[in-house]
Length: 188
Length: 188
Image 1 (cartoon, rainbow over the protein chains, first blue to last red):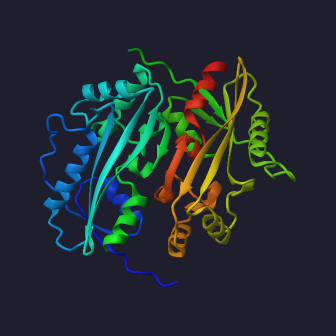
Image 2: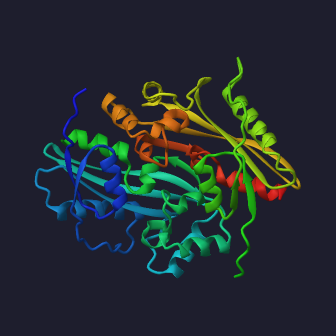
Image 3: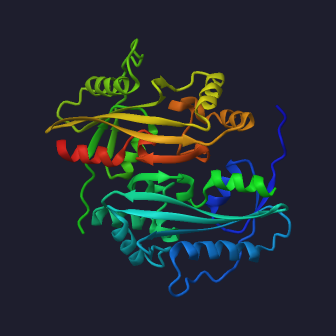
């Protein structure tokens, strides 16, 4: 078996989880976080918001013809978004809303390369188990919820509160790797 | 909020993943691996095998009235079992069989305590993405497949090859934590 050189990809995101997934899939990753205004527009639906941000991050990265991946993950239910909490109190509120219920994690991905552009998004349904006030307090105290959409990380301590997953689970980590690799092959 | 002392549980398993899940759920874990003959009997169906081993591990741990968790995880499809590989070659064979297809991960759990016994099992459907020979070679070379039922770890490097999950994802790690916690509450 001949070992191929790892193909290079630009990642328009500072997310260590997206980088890790691409690296584990065999890519050499150049991180180029894109500074875009991430505010949600009035009336903008959660999935539309994520798709717009992925596209804007891709544009801001100015990849030229290089292989590029941009992504944005939104945690939502019934049109309500559970964003990265800005404080422990907001993390507590988010977890109180998510505990014991189903929600949707959508990652919008924008892939581009010499052979064109492939924007897409993937939904995964996630059910968190019921959490007591003590569970929530203990989890918030770890600090993990503070930089995560939905105030939990499936790969970390938060995984113990994820009861059921229907769909891509790398999507819940922030990048649906199977679909992303397929898109990269189409544009490379 | 008053902090409760962590309840103690005996774990009749050497699996670091089961221990980790119980600890993250707030239990103080005493590990007491049970030495039982894990061979599958002729004609024994995969789920029946796992349930029997969980029961035998629980019996061998001689927990008395203490809280006890025993578990056995089997990866299977169409009656065929994909056990922990005994060599890199067997790991390659298993991954070749699982790649690109759905399989089932069943964890049989035997929980007991002062108020009785709760045996149960949980199935999760998992689809692995297609893997090239190079993907398989690279993954086997990490060593991770060698001590895992099904020759992959969803929590580790192998997670990148898991395309879809339907059901409990802690079950795929080796212990369906939501159901286990519910059973523990019933027998404690």
